[in-house]
Image (tube, rainbow, N blue to C red):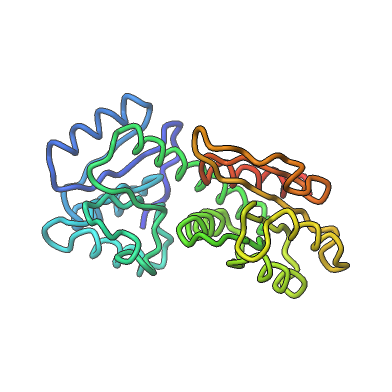
Length: 262
């Protein structure tokens, strides 16, 4: 595989067999400052990668020939690490279909251009952060307390892409059981957590000798207009950072800030 292109504008390889969609997405992304190369099949996309490696790939799954899955199998079997790959697919059950497949993310097709742009920005930022972490050799161990499988998977993938190792726990008691033996560099807790909420878990971790000095992040995921729990409810004296999160990016930012100041 070729070297990653070093340019001011990130290079995106968009792979889809729909000619109109290729042109539309190319124009939209170039308007927002990205370089875009196009491929109409998995085979053509593989040839593009032999010429130069983009900063990320946006990949349709349902295409003639080897299709998107054939492309994924070949790039992931390569000795060279592939660029981040965002899956674009019309399949409804994305979660089960892509179980065990290493991708940066996936979105349903069709989607709004603005949502696509947001996903691209998030993935490129995570990729850049992971590269810096790898360069500095600054990998950390994160203990994540999250009982929602979808959010747990989102955070797990994002943190591992940043070069960190992650242990997940599905309840407050599971966090308390795991933390003393795992000795994580940071504990990340959902505010409302099965078995025992994040605030009380944080207080108990502070009382345990093995975790008394471990940085703790508590997050409260809310939607627009939802009531927000106060910082005092989260046991603010026992928490290094409390974040009201509209999406996973807010949580990841809080983790990075906490690790940077630890």
